[in-house]
Length: 95
Image 1 (cartoon, rainbow, N blue to C red):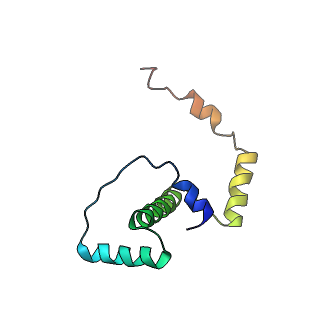
Image 2 (tube, rainbow, N blue to C red; image 1 turned 120 degrees about the horizontal axis):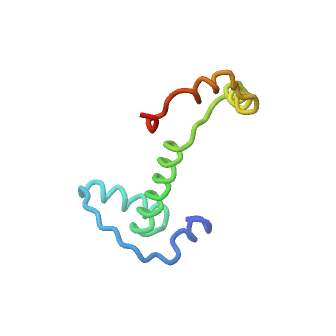
Image 3 (tube, rainbow, N blue to C red; image 1 turned 30 degrees about the horizontal axis):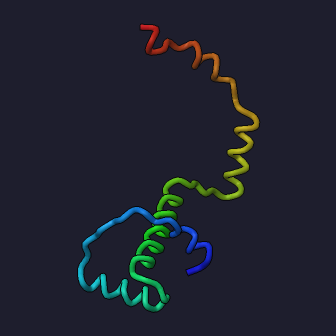
């Protein structure tokens, strides 16, 4: 475990109990042993890394350079031609 990863685990106060199949526990135990860490540290590290990856995958949008340039240009030069007609429409409060 790296020094940066170790700092993540400082001051742990929360507990999470989980149930798993014995075969899964054996695989996790083997991986923890290979890395020279405890099952608890291994599961915390793996869960934390998976959670960060999942959050990033669901909250980040990646686009190619051309699409980004088109988007940035649209933001820099907005088309106001339809704004007057949109603002002239009745709102839900006008009824």
